[in-house]
Image (cartoon, rainbow over all chains, first blue to last red; front, side, top):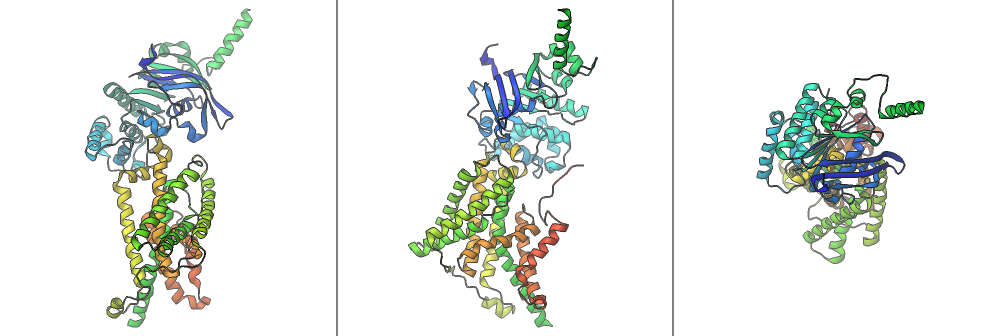
Length: 271
Length: 302
């Protein structure tokens, strides 16, 4: 794969919080233009940190990329700030939806267009287009966002991000705490946005099975390191992934570190 | 009986109108609290600084009234700009307490600068509006109400309408409300926090100037204006720290209550209860309705 076909190229980054807490040891990943890439792992594995490193939102949490490089759409991101990244077409949907609770659903969505210089008419046109993907939100456009359901709030967050007309979306656990039916609905919308709008997507998920079924490629990270990567198909049929992430567990092994430990033990025995 | 009722009306209306003067001061606090969840301790100093500059322009340089007012307003925008650049931006990721302490420091800086530039003596500010009863109202309604109070009421009304329109119908207003709800999420969709900060500090500066003009015309432009900030505290506790209508209503309540209590209950305490009655009221609010009358309730979905 040549580098020009990758919209995002992360090379061996290390991330520290407060100059002491090492959150990412060595993460490299690529997102090809127009594809959906899943970043999988348990709580605390470093998924959110990776996404925030890309959107440059780390700074507001006193985090810093201390090694490696991140290239987005052909340019390095290290001198950018979040609003500049949005200007370049990269928008992050933060974990936990984070809607503006006191604003109406429609105001929430419109706020996503803040960085673009649009006339009232253009905004309405964009809004109508967004509503074709999020039909449910159109019905609730006048409600205060805080009083909508969890699934609706997730849709608001994605719709809001889409109003910025992104080339790339970073989705942080879009299905957290949602019922299976809603999980499917959210992923359908994400797929549709990817195919019809051509948005490249990097999504962090704990829900390995659903995420891989809706992605082209996947990376599995543990304690700040990429342990395994491959096409979504190959990961879904990988025995270790099945065992460790798809809940078909045996022998009490819980993560790749355990697997590596066991392997080195058996090697020693053989020797 | 009729006389007593008229007298009560006069006390009440006088109190309500005087209350709008408190509202004007409280408005400045609300603006900044909405955007940064910080109580701006330098608001009183901003009132003093802005109105002293206004007087200085007029009296020391003989600049005409309107031009001097515009210059003072622009100066407050510059103050907002410097505050954003040299105080808030370096503290971007610091805790709210740190920012709070910084505003106390900023207050001292502004007080010092104002007095260094324009001297320490009390100045008279003549707005061309007398602080005495309007003859027409006194003759026809038998109420003695100060022209300055009526002006303050009108100015407060205009400002609240203006701010409401700004927040509800403009793009930057939407940005401000978004930041007030969740600054992190707002920056994730490209709303530049520094523009919003610049806006609210400039707006708070101009509001401070207007409040300063009203108070300066009544009590003279002097250092004591700084302590007005303290009177705004019970107003904000009653009205709610994050609500613009709350600041107005809170001011009206404080103004009315303190005057009525002073006149009818004051004598039993040897008078001068105006000074502390608002704080007693504020304590009751803190106990039974801590978010204030109009404060944004923390919305929790169940």
